[in-house]
Image (cartoon, rainbow, N blue to C red; front, side, top):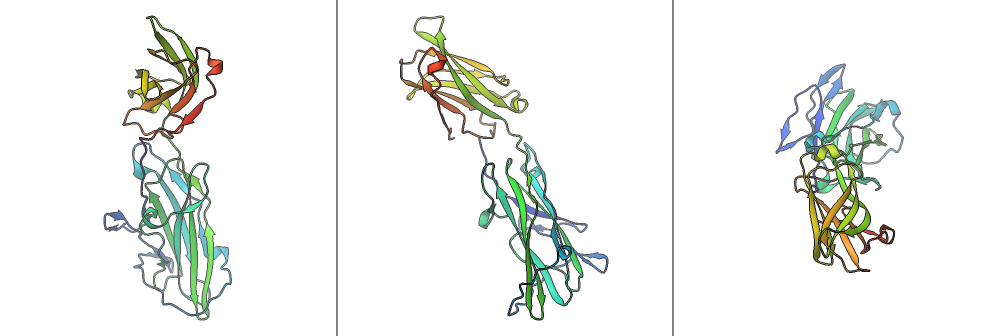
Amino acid sequence: MNHSLVPSLVVLSSVPVVPFSLRLALVACAVAAGTLVAGAPAAVAATSGSDSREASTSSASVSRGVCTTSLDDPQGRAASFTVRMARREGSGGFGFTATLQEKSRGGSWTTLSGSASPAGLGSFQPAADGAGSMVRKINVRGLRMGSSYRLKVGFRWTTASGRQTVTRRSSSCTVKDLRPNLGVARSLGWIPGTSGGQVVYRARLRVSRVATLTDRTATLSVLQGDTVLGSATFETLTRGVTALVPGARCKAGSDITIRIEAGSTVEERTLDDNELTARCDSLPGTALTARRHRVVG
């Protein structure tokens, strides 16, 4: 059972975090004259013209991401970043726009936008009036286990001649995947059963993070087409276990499907290896032209 989560955003600072319409909202703080000031966002007046000059590293930075994880609490799956920005000589207002980027295992970087974007990101965050610098600590929660995250920040200073801008990306961090995984690694063929016409199917299972499966059951089934030849339920699984499933004998030379299914309360890391298709044979050597399938449901 897999879940799709929409990330939420909270900014940690020395001032209280203010809730925003049922979501954790962006709270800003600014450092002015050595004093931490809670800055109410104010719009920066639009100016004409532009200035492509790069800002110095010291006046704009974003820290490396720090990720935390949790198996049971989605809000514990989070990434934190610190954005620092200073007023540049000759500039008036300044601020930044931050977006979160995500990369799934084996995927490429994607900027989260629309309904997938955390509340509060993607909009311009100005410094407080008169502030010489600003520090904002951004914590995004409700992330996906196994994915990596980084913050893309566009810094902007308003000057008499236009705007100065620079873009920086943080180093990424990964939300560690704590979910268990069950899979069918290999078909070992069948052996004769104890009653006429019955055989015992053998399969090598792949089990990871078995500790999270304690007191939870899994069912292994053998099918030929839509016909269930046999099934067995296991209450305790160990790494590299060979499972035995008694059932009706399959038709020689035809395909069988071996399927493992966890209980509805178990969220697996992947469903891509929950099925294996092999030839019906008593010899494992001819049963390994296998095709794996993703189990949907």
